[in-house]
Length: 300
Image (cartoon, rainbow, N blue to C red; front, side, top):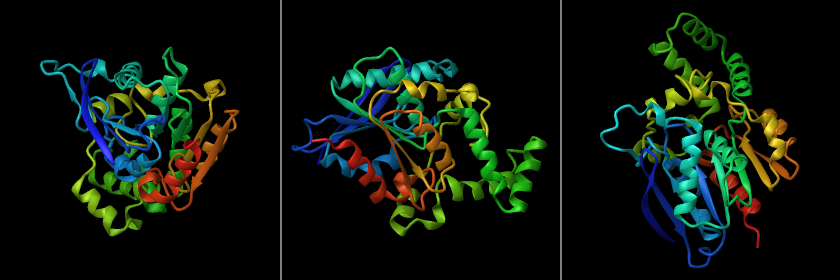
């Protein structure tokens, strides 16, 4: 494996990026990986998927405000940077930097929103294939799924969540503890991870830039109060005219039933559900997830 790290100038600062490839794969269409969040980083994606670089180059990057990327100094009022258009323009800057003529996009969660925005927007060149992993396509449907899954929690946990939300106590410890129960079922199933995975998480603790996350989404996974509160691209799925893979976990907060509905809107598309996995299926069940991506993307 060979790799090259770089920083790319974008509006508001610089984003960190890395391309991984082999001598055999380097001339094939690259796969750009768009992490979720917003405000998170590439760490779990790289840990899980970098092995696919033997089939095609893989490009990871940290969106502005997250991970190794950084905001321009002397610019304390950054809220104007946290919007869908700027993040999509940022992706276009990365594609231009690498001078890509042929490439594929893989988005995880919010990263899928960016992949769709790039496809629908006035950007060129266009990707050849899309992979939409546990995608945020409709905030309304996301919140409906969250509500349904919350109701399936143990009664005492659900009661705590409802009570704290009704009384504006979502910053309390008991609310955070109850949320952890949801996360362990539907976001990242930590109780089922092996020692190697747990060690990676311990050495690479999840860090979310709350300024970005709250401006774009809100205070937690369940409902949006930020700029994505009215995000809606369901009707636009019919305009996707390239091969598209929808992929998610059996226990995903982006429910398999919802992904099936999305998949039905895209003419040339497939749906893969990873057994036993949740929202971070690429990390929880890497072999199965990688196999699905390889089979979909590696076109001789």
